[in-house]
Image 1 (cartoon, rainbow, N blue to C red):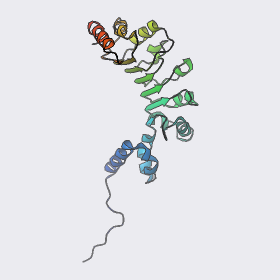
Image 2 (cartoon, rainbow, N blue to C red):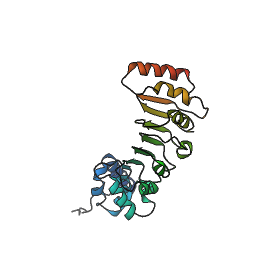
Image 3 (spheres, rainbow, N blue to C red):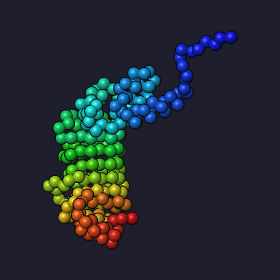
Image 4 (cartoon, helix red, strand yellow):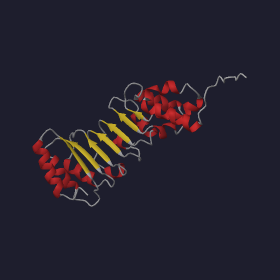
Length: 222
């Protein structure tokens, strides 16, 4: 007795099929534009992964993100974009930030007053060159990780005081400068500080040793 073979091939349960495609998309986001052509259900499952990390490279540019903002249904970008990099040359950054209300990690070169006005309330990690000390506790109420990549012309005392007021900050990283050793003490002056990790990016062993000594005796580490 002969058995007819099905042309459809094996069929996976939807949850397993979705898991397979999501793993592929997460491992190689650049493949998502091709993977979504397989079927409409695949497009629905993994297209948000294409926009999860917009770092400005290859297909993940500000221009591509603006195009998606203008063409995708309302709310799609708000939930899809979680990691965002914006550079000074990026056009439409106000529109981008206004649409990406679910951003968790943000990398920017500078933050002026207009930029700060569009910071999403969900932000937890910030990588920035010049941290805006004015009203920082209000703007970054959920911030847990702060990486200051370079201090420009700012008031260091005001910067230290504002960082100390961030209620959920647990990790701070800043560059090798003369004022690095005094940073933990200034932040330890307030009971709101709950920082558990401080990273000083330096090539100087003496600076690292002095900073470590100051951190150990301060109340900044809990």
